[in-house]
Image 1 (tube, rainbow, N blue to C red):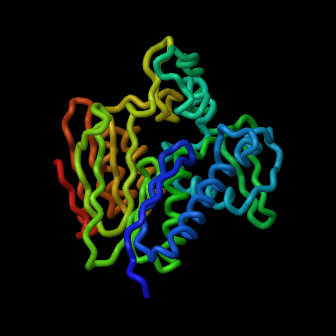
Image 2 (cartoon, rainbow, N blue to C red):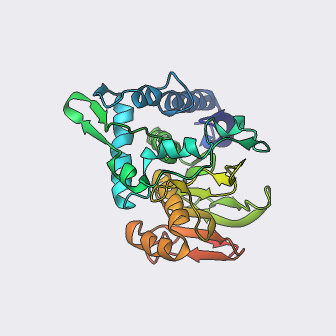
Length: 322
């Protein structure tokens, strides 16, 4: 059998830079990377709100009527409903109208963030009631969903992590002994106990290209969320993509950025956003209850760093930069 070597592939998908590093025989590399590219292209076609031909775009035009959906869409909507409950509604895919109101009307790379964009006005007073009424109902026996009247959803807050988990689990099932799948900072790694740890740098959002800290792990997931990277100017001031469903406006807590490390990329992604919305104090309490085994590396607005270490965290996970 030929020796496994670490092979790296980089490409663009889902409005993010994707990096895949796999330990496999050279003769198997081309086929494996082709399948990975194909998977991310498929996920984008299903879930992108910026593609008029996506399944999600069609669903958002359904105006309260029952719609047949793919098994893929059904799986993500079921997962989204569970995380909406776990976060007490702070993770809420039904905030699309508020994202648009804030000016996030195109994929971020197409926004000219140096310009003053439309949007940014104050949401209507009935925000809490309208968000609470928004939602969907799944009918699994007939693979159908019905959005509540007026509901429009954006699954970008979960689908990258979920896509990473799905393709990582597939690669592990194919017998690839070690690897990394990273989609715009939502990533999964795996490897044997005799292999060196993967070292994941956490970028300082105030100084792009500068490492704020490092987490080293043999297997698990890492995801980062924050208020600086995806932000833009409006006539009413600076806005960003982390919408607080309690207000309909961009979040305004004491957290600039949160990196969570746990088992699954989807859960780490949701957890990082939730801590950003709640703030470091309430967020720490929620993380300990809802995501046991997950750690968080938090950059506060005052420039200080807070590391939340779970008592039940993976002993092989090491942090640098506290």
